[in-house]
Structure formats: structure tokens, C-alpha cells
Length: 283
Image (tube, rainbow, N blue to C red):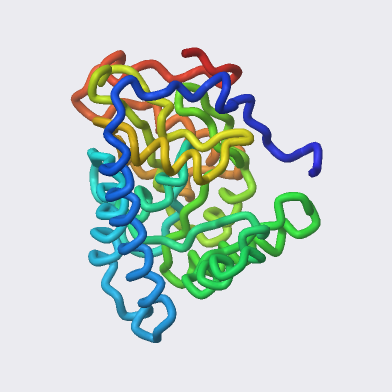
């Protein structure tokens, strides 16, 4: 692994707090079964030519159903993203982030190239329009940016997690700048989205139950989510950042990152909670 790749300090042992209230195992299994049915339905669509004619609204509703089927409530705030080419960027906490962003606006995902080689899932991801990035090859970065810009110019939405790694939700990383160059080249706006997970019993505090960090396995993370009680995913659609107002990708990335912590109009500072620490996870 290259030394320049972003690495989060979050680990399951130090950051992921077990839920104080868990549902019974049979109920968790039913939740997983419901998620599996929805995923199989999506696979059936992806394997047919019909996938290109599925309305965006249907994809958005399906994405929300996946999260709800896992037992997680969804709360979306903010204005609807604009139509046309758009770069969606968000902090990265969980595998749930992907359907949550799709619930805001269906988009082509940017994912690490290793996923392309996964059995079955890799082929399905490619057929579904996922764009892949070789994270450990700096020389491949210009080609990735060019592919992103091309997709954006065609009017598509592209979703990315510029932190480059998952964090526990109580800490976050800085936005990497490369994907923002694609927005500048394509002259499309950036839509920042803020993702948070909260538990019902402590609604004012961020929950780490949904986090998928460090050496955590996907199976362990999925089971933790399905067995959690009262978990809520908060999706805050922040103000759009026009790419044309920024001269370079550094300033555009900084503006998109700052937009995540800016309260919406009419809400005073301090009512949205403080920005989590960049350097450490505090439980």
C-alpha cells in the first residue's frame, strides 16, 4: 500500500461502541433477509437492458428501502440536489452511506479498483456504472479524473467519498482534492452531504454502531447494524458549491468540506453540533 493513501485511526476496538439495546436475533435475521431480497431484485434489474430505463425516483426509493430493511430509520434534511451534472461528496462512515447517497440522488459511484475483481459483485458493480480508481497508483489518477469529468459532462451525477477511508462518525478526515478537479474540468457544481448515525436512546450523540472501520469485517458490521435498536441515519443535504467560483481544486475541496459544518439558513450556530475531531476518536 502506498504511503500517500489516507488512513483513518478508527478501529473497531477503540471506536465502535456496542449498542446498549439490541433486537432479538430472529428479528435481526429477518432484517437481513429483507435486505437480501431487495439486493437480489436490484441484481435482476442490473442484468437486463431495463436498467437504463429505471426512473431515478425508483432508484432513490429502493435505496431508502434497503436502509429501512436493515432496521435503520432515515431522516433527510435540506433542499433537493439540482439536476444535470453534479459531484456528490460526503463523509464516509459505513457501507450504508452508499444507498443513503443514492436516496438523495442516484449517481455513479467512485470505488476502489479492487472491487472490480471481486467475484460476481465486481462484474455487477461495473455493469451498474461504478467508476473505479487505482488508489495505489498516482500515475493512474489523471485518467480517473478524466473519466469522472467525462461522466459529469454527460449530465450524470457522480458520488465520491473524498476522505479516502471510513471513519467512525465521531472523527473525520480531510477531503482529498483529486475528485474536485473533475468538477472544475466539467464545470459542474459540487453537492456536499453530511452523514450521521444516532441511537434513539441517546439521540443527541453520534452513534458508532454503523461504522465500518479498520480491520472490521463486512459481516460483523452488517450484523451490528441489523441487531441495533433505534438506529437513525441523518442525511443533511448541504448548500451547493458552484465550481465556477473557485480557481483551483484546493479551494473547491475546502469549500465543500466547510459546507458540511455550516448550519442551514435560519438555524443558529451551535444547534447543529460541533464538528468532530480530525485527529482522534473520542467515545
